[in-house]
Image 1 (cartoon, rainbow, N blue to C red):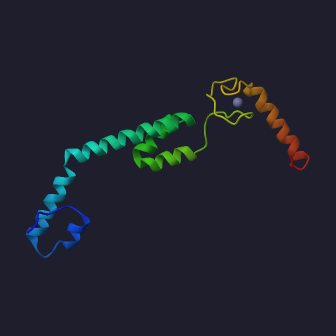
Image 2 (cartoon, rainbow, N blue to C red; image 1 turned 135 degrees about the vertical axis):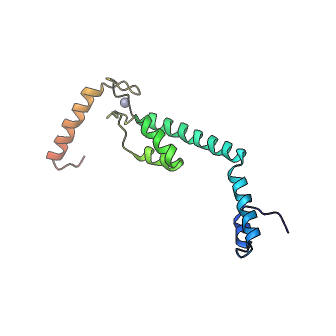
Image 3 (cartoon, protein in one colour; image 1 turned 180 degrees about the vertical axis):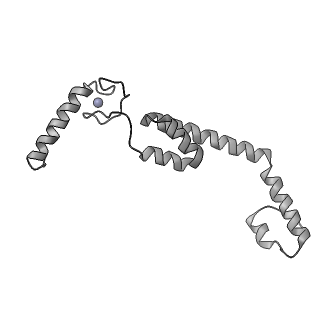
Length: 133
Ligand SMILES: [Zn+2]
């Protein structure tokens, strides 16, 4: 009889009435689960996921959320963090994120406070006049 392999094909061919075969399959699966190479890969993948999440979170101004989501959900967590609203003040002129403490846009140099007030006023004006511009 061929050596047991913990694969879907092996499981499909497994005769569940044959207790010996079930035990050997069990052992094969356990050996695979305890394989340090697999754990090495899992660890590596997890670290890459967390680093990616930390990077995306950092861009969004929520590094911790990025790390947590990526650690729990991996690349799906990246998407969640990437789609979540940024905590950083975005420049009304160029639309790029800035550090929360920034007074001027680090991308185009516009004064964020003044510019935000101007934008809010022009939005109000736009709403008053029907909003088409
Ligand atoms: Zn800007």
